Image (cartoon, rainbow, N blue to C red; front, side, top):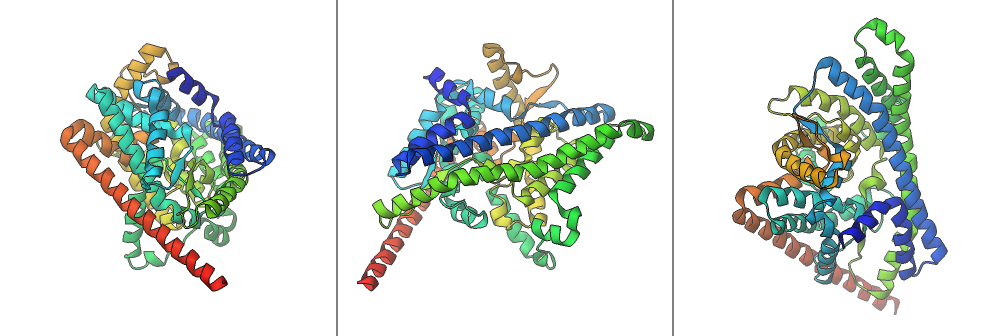
Length: 473
């Protein structure tokens, strides 16, 4: 079974999405050709996004490594990036069975009406496997590992339900879609609290600075494309030790700026493919539910946050945070983690933050700054356990992607810097049965609350449908 699921994951989203969407589309009444076309567009979207992300990594990575060497910024926790974290997660006993276990939990929650999300984002199941793997090695118990993964999955599905309506209202053409990814879900409470708090500060509550407003007010200066070029050129200049070297390296510096600008411009264009592919499936799903399950509170398809990372506010704030986070990582007392490989994942902090900040650049930036700074300390805190897991996987597989340089611990901002993962780890590893009891109570309380709301919404829809039928008669 381990080999079967490794094979499925190894095919990647670009290959499996056309298969999944074709089967799903046919099952809900779409013509096979149209279903395949939808899946192919989503698959091409994943390919395009991986190419753009690779461009960002290949352009920015060497430049930042040069800056680290010049200014001696090396810290003791080595940034392995999300590919290494996913490799660690899937190559453990927890990761081998995480897909069937989580799918089983999802089906059980759908039957008991404790969730409305059908999570088909199989490739991001590594997040659940990751927290399970770290707990597994920290507690030396497979049962504790699966416990942490399942608790994380339950809480994430419920947060996906809670945020679904707001997510769909904020992002256009996302009806019937929710985001059950725990890295994103963990930032929702911060987005809500910080946004509410800033609204109570006189003056700030009136500052409606969104990305479109920046374009209108600052013209070219407010464009993500231009900001990408500026930040790229600035980082390129930092790789030089003198003014003369800057002059000598002008082609490289300008090239880095253009590449960063290209990333900012291409990401929104690629994400359009996701929307075009998802819309027929989403529309058909809602139509089927309306026909077959009158009064039902509509199901949502759980998808990757990659669908919406092209939003202008996400691009602007992610870009502005990169130099700020690098500076803070060096000066913050107690932090040992310098994010380099993880910076490409900065875009994924914001998909569920924006619906609460309403795309306000200032609120989004402050939220992002708070959660990323907390993430630095969280990665530092659990780096020893991540290192234990990574070295065990490397010894078993010889995978160079999870190799940690001598004298370093390993870490990754992607999910290791998630408040949800960190809290579950601390309660499970630190408090054992007391912490587990608290997590069970929280999960059951959230499931009960969600079920009450689902049933209440169903009754309201049934009453509305009944009134509509009577008025028609």
